[in-house]
Length: 214
Image (tube, rainbow, N blue to C red; front, side, top):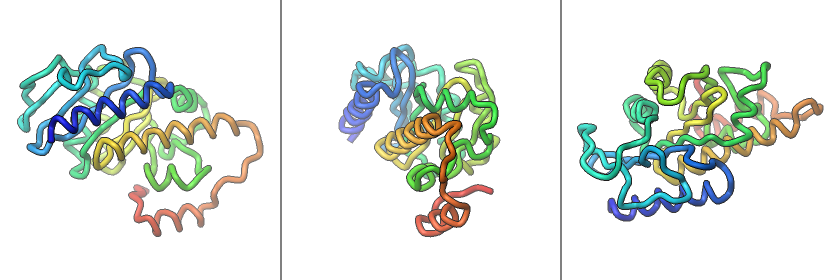
């Protein structure tokens, strides 16, 4: 099972890279193994060229037992796993439009994405915009822990989104929806826009049983 998960992580990461959702050696990805351990993309690697055999492998106690040294953003990943029992994978990207939207001065920090389509609501719930932190700063993990597991997605200002999902495919799908919605928001900025109404948002939250932290 670990072999299949290794290959799935690298396949999905390459798909993200090939479509320009993160570039160079940016971004990191992790997933729970069946025995409670973690597979994590190594530090300084490209999503387009991950080697399944070299993924950082942690046991259930958090000890590195194989592969290369992990991403410096491990505190972010561990914070999600520690506070969300449903988290089976975590993805962090430096996706262009979500970063651009995080720089806008009038963005709602408690509900980062405007209600433009139903899908960001269904896949992400409310996205919290966190302040800027130096890359690798353990304070990012502390900020995620401060949310007490109530959010599946956060946006690091001037940096990039981080999303937890039930498995690696769900996490990748959700973070792509975040970037797509941010792109729509940038495209519509300054243009009179008919967004979803509060009643429509409420219906989606109820019908799809969305986590919607108030």
